[in-house]
Image (cartoon, rainbow, N blue to C red; front, side, top):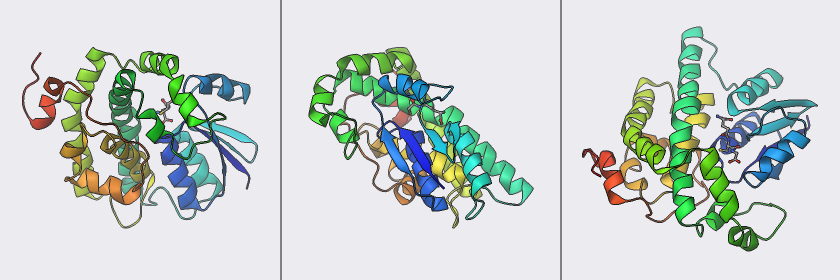
Length: 251
Ligand SMILES: N[C@@H](CCC(=O)N[C@@H](CS)C(=O)NCC(=O)O)C(=O)O
């Protein structure tokens, strides 16, 4: 089986797919892309969309963490990513949808908001990446890329404040899924790989780590993705963090 995975270093759904390929025991080559530039490269490589993860596998082109999960399951059923029993499978698929559609993006927006203000942490998120130029140079010239990525992801003040206000409910939902046994069981499934990477990315932010690390969601991320790359020192306005501490947001 020949596989090439296109990623942006430290992108959470990209790491989801790396974990799933490892779970299936499928060897792959990785192409690391810079944000924004990634869009042109993906189009040139024949993918219909402009986001990573994107996977070429045995001649097929599959894009998006959830379609890729299904393609991997089809190509190599064992070990499974989804339970066989219909009710359990439906629960895992709904948890995976939640992870993709509801959890991924607010955390992405918070990260890009931080990067816009301080580009120095970019280096830590790019550790080990092969982006075709020295990381130091990439960081020095990153301002336009960061600005465009922040705009593409609507990482402005309003959306970022909203993302922070939503975070407690999202974390509670992850804890509830763990308590229900949908994720965090003995056999990791597609929803574990989908959700744990978003929590893993959130844990790299010093502003968010204290409200995540001691709850079940934090333990799941440490188990599934213990070496998530990157570290962002405190950067968010303290008033914006109040909802995370159970306090109403102030101006
Ligand atoms: N929900 C999609 C997310 C795809 C996505 O938004 N990927 C981001 C990286 S995390 C991307 O490619 N962004 C392009 C850019 O920032 O230029 C999935 O799970 O595949």
